[in-house]
Image 1 (spheres, helix red, strand yellow):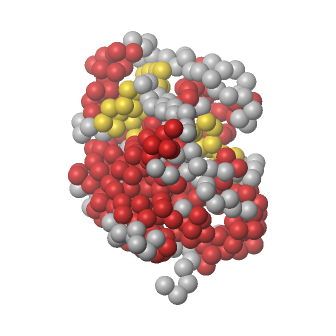
Image 2: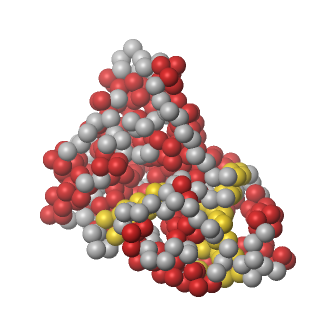
Length: 398
Ligand SMILES: NC(=O)c1ccc[n+]([C@@H]2O[C@H](COP(=O)([O-])OP(=O)(O)OC[C@H]3O[C@@H](n4cnc5c(N)ncnc54)[C@H](O)[C@@H]3O)[C@@H](O)[C@H]2O)c1
């Protein structure tokens, strides 16, 4: 379909944070934003790891001169659950803060923005089960990512583990978009290689999945395309030399661009299959996505040949216009190669997943219709099981 035809057939809504600020050193402008919002009490939400590397103290030092009362919430270890979110809301509701500053990777940012939106809402049950939409928020919110990344600072999603169901589930609300997103690549310099690799591939997953998504529009595709081009230029350098500021700048850009594409076009089957792995086996989200991506694309890529030709070109894998069916193979080979290039696991068995659990994982993934229905090839439970089985063994004979 030509781009003009495509534009004629869609109603195009596009959502972003109120202010999106990007730049090396932009972190320092946080203080101006706090003053501009005219708030009386601030909560800093982050995690234990970032407290240890001094990031939380850095925020406190920055805002000390304006003498605004501040509380800190850092009871986040690993990827957050709904129970943790409820605890955060209970704790911060009592504090009556009128601004929440979230600083961290996706885990801290998701808790920060969901807490800001849920403070003052009373009984949370219907909101946490997604029966009731969170329409608005009264607490202001500023988000600063320290990974590149989930793009959480620009999305309407927040992802939590459901311990009872042993799956991860997303809450979606426009109230999760912050008043201000400040993306300062310097904040990512201290990110260790494994987190850089896993969160970097997570961002790439947002880019490639949003590019082929049913809900993709010409506008979201611009963001997805640029994000994929930046990924291939920067990921290896950022993982193997974390002090390379230019690589970190490229990664921060792509993470936010891919986040905007995710927020407006959604993602698909790779995420649907990753969520049960996070819920039951607590595998980091980026690692699950990275590992599943080649196996999922091998299964679904034949239904989006044109997009695979585009993706191959964005990743500089070659021009496949005259032999379109080879584009998918080139993309899948690239996705497999990434795992070893970035020292990421290459099979589910390596991650401690047992083979007997695969049918249950497939049953859970098959229920995530929000994501599966946004994928051009509709996977059923049997096909999903086959993908898990292939990912369990890893790529054989290559
Ligand atoms: N809201 C969304 O749109 C969205 C999208 C994708 C993923 N997610 C969610 O985000 C979470 C994963 O986030 P993530 O991949 O950013 O990892 P993370 O937030 O879980 O952080 C991983 C580890 O890296 C550490 N870390 C982060 N930044 C650091 C830095 N600059 N220096 C040193 N250490 C640092 C953290 O302390 C933590 O120990 C998952 O729960 C996932 O489901 C949300």
